[in-house]
Length: 181
Image (cartoon, rainbow, N blue to C red; front, side):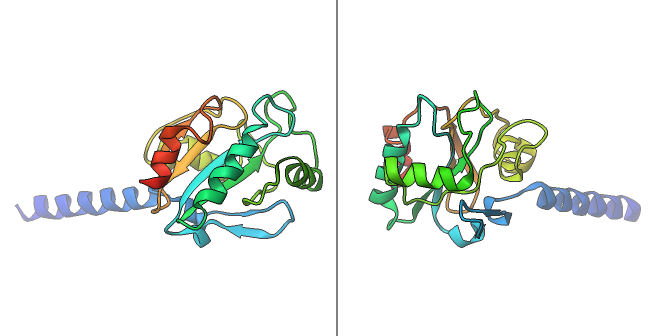
């Protein structure tokens, strides 16, 4: 009987330890922004975060306007948009970080945080997107980044809560209600 209790306790300990190791949040990541400065996701604790992969030469590029609109409407209400330029789809983000920064500011007045250009799929997928797309890391679901301007919604605890494909605009009622909720 004593051996059974010891084995059960050991099993429980291993299970809890494994769960703690695999349960991740967005707060563990540090990345570089478009200016090469370190951006620490831990600085966003307590905020809802919309993460989006962007591109300057895409049919969805005008979504920058809506992203900026919701950012400005809700940035003082514990919400932030974080953009990640990526050149993974149709070479639609060929620019350098400096060119991307200029494009976003001049054409769309972007003031929300924009990170340096990364890869959002394939063997060189950035670790943030590995977290966003792998259930083993995010605890919610597996997903593939299908195209530019796919949206990942992160709750105030740093956990992935929802994924929306490119065709769902940033000002869609589902996203706005999530921000307000």
